[in-house]
Image 1 (cartoon, rainbow, N blue to C red):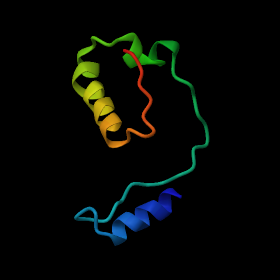
Image 2: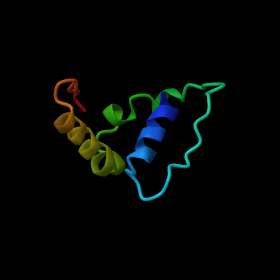
Image 3: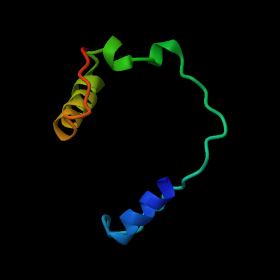
Image 4: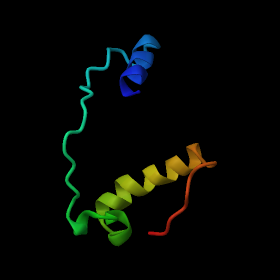
Length: 73
């Protein structure tokens, strides 16, 4: 599915150059340590969360209101 989507983007010339990101199967997945889980919810005053994540989350809610699920920091 990912490869087909990249083909569509390339065909539509969405970007100035072809996408070169490698798409490969995930052989192994390691769950992150517990302190990484729900990091934004556990650390809402972290400057990175404030500057990067909160605006992105707000934008997702604006672009996809029909499927967006609100959460409390």
